[in-house]
Length: 202
Image (cartoon, rainbow, N blue to C red; front, side, top):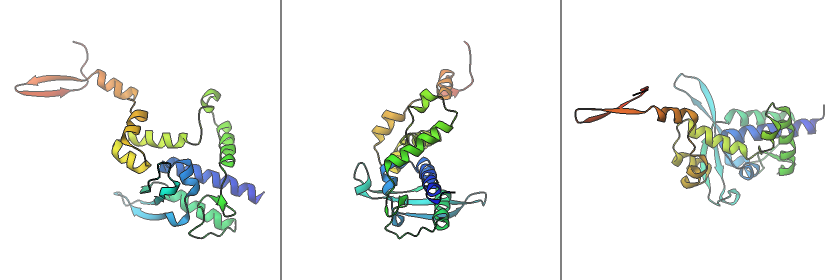
């Protein structure tokens, strides 16, 4: 009913979706401009079409003051956000903020206010909700990339941080990895050592 309220909610919605799927820092994404992001169409091995966002983080907006470029699996959210801007009668230039309002950055306090409302609508236990902040989406992205087999080197380059930082914060074996480790065995066959899995007991 209220176009301004609708716009704010959709801005936050798409900001969070892009952050969760790009691994950007909050400040980097709030300051990204349209000239620094483009959507590319690609075709997968099964001939399915998908959209990637090619993103450029400028040195002055990065926490570590080092610029970087990368692809992120959030092209469809950028495209949908562009459609919503058009629906709301919003025009923009290459120099405008992607997630801006009235030519300015969308405030961090407004983002946090909406994020709190979203958290309160979830079934996440309250004591856990209190620990979650917008930056948790970056942690989730890095954790998911690590679990999917991406190297710490590629994660570090994508996210604009060091390999040492990734290892220090995210190198925690999962329960599945711990179980796999617990049952690892080997046997000697001639001069060779052969790894064996699923070996139990003596």
